[in-house]
Length: 226
Image: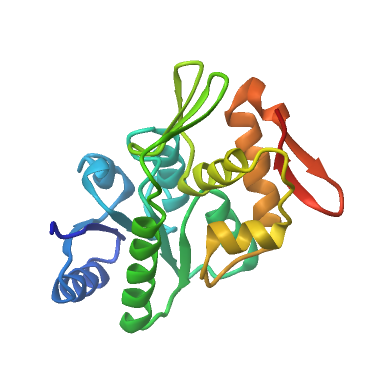
């Protein structure tokens, strides 16, 4: 079985070396980049997971995440933010960008490794049967984890993709925020109710004309109606 490849992106060289060493001891392949710009030059689509610092040189980790999530080739790659910025607004901002977890510095290596294992496990177990799910011209390719609308690829994040899978597999059913959190976020450590609302809003915008089929039932939750 191929090893997971992990890219550590942080401008603290000593921290990169420590994380790289410990990830490799755990059996992963690990590379490091000391800036967001360097990370972009390293073909990030090759990696199973990215560990990103937020505060770096000219390009922040948030901006790098935006670029990766906007590109269909990298939109599905899990991201964990590792940063000293631990305010709630920063946490929400990171999660709303499609990050899978957020670890505040200083952190223990055991915590980082545990989060890495958890995110990689969720990414693997989230793999559903390889049949396509579709509504008219909206198609979810479960093998490649890609979404297209009338033939146009859409840069959905993993969470947006999984929410859409959930709703399309149960047309007409309304899911509460708690149900969506349980099914899509599973054992996430940091989960806020408004994260659901933000992801639904972004999902509606990304799927264009089909967004009107994602309905809100005030006091109940969200669903997909044909």
